[in-house]
Image (cartoon, rainbow, N blue to C red; front, side, top):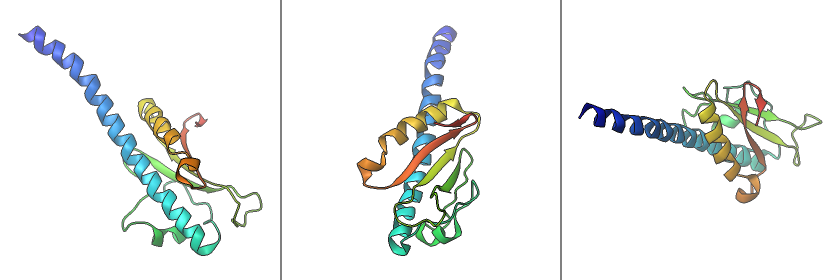
Length: 139
């Protein structure tokens, strides 16, 4: 009986961990989707992109376009918004990026990378680049 319970636990624990990792990745990707939609709405209204913000901080001009209490920082990840415009003025045609940084959790990084690959800008008609930032750079 003890051996059977041990074998069942050995099967259940990895599956439970994988399910928790997928749930966290899904929640983080939904936060990224929310931020992306707010960025698009801001751009449509102001004809510009917000200025780059510090990692974990919502760009102040973006806050009115986000749900109340929305944060770029959670227990498992930190979002970073970057305005990549070469001339720095953020006009139409500029590229912007929304990165997520996950520390010390390669499984979560892989799960996020997989989900974000399915959220390509072309498939959603949006122009905000999404990426996962690891300790070794972006992926």
